[in-house]
Figure (spheres, rainbow, N blue to C red):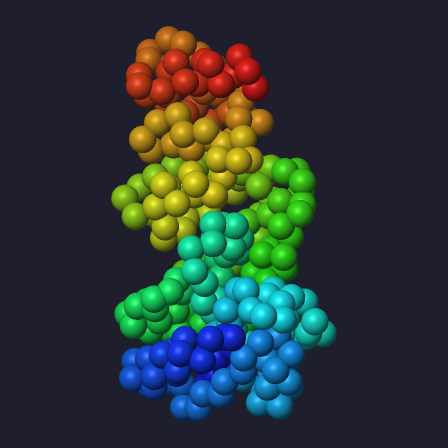
Length: 246
């Protein structure tokens, strides 16, 4: 595979190129660019399989660069400092990102995922979701990746999420279920601004899908579709207060 590294800092580009050479044998050639304009030029010239790009550069952002392309035929791995907004966007879209300083093991894993996505053509949908940052709550979408499929789901259609070890099961309208290999805590951080509430160690629910709160037997929420979700004793007062002010 061919790779392109785009960053306005020469020392960062050199470090990334050296790490790719040392830890990613499936990448056989690596080119460099120092910003959006030079990055676009290199993309058109080289037709890379993977582009590593910084988020914020002197002449724009990595997202600006992607928006200027009429077609995206490569995988993107963002290189970012601790920019919360950017990281949230990547989590929603399930696009890989590396934080500075770059960990060699994380780099190798990201390249392996990119290689798999190339084989399964799972990238264009992810970019579209990432760029939907200004959508309303009712329009927002999230990418959920199973082993052999990728799903683009409207957040408003999620009913609840259930934890099972390192896996999370999403319960969706029309009795659909999707199991992903990420823990519930990560999705709690992503979905909390969209009226999602952790009501139990094992459950995260969409408050807009609550039909009834039963206070007996410790407390249960009846969700749209009939699912009965337990409320932990520790969360009972939080749920009651949340519903009163919802």
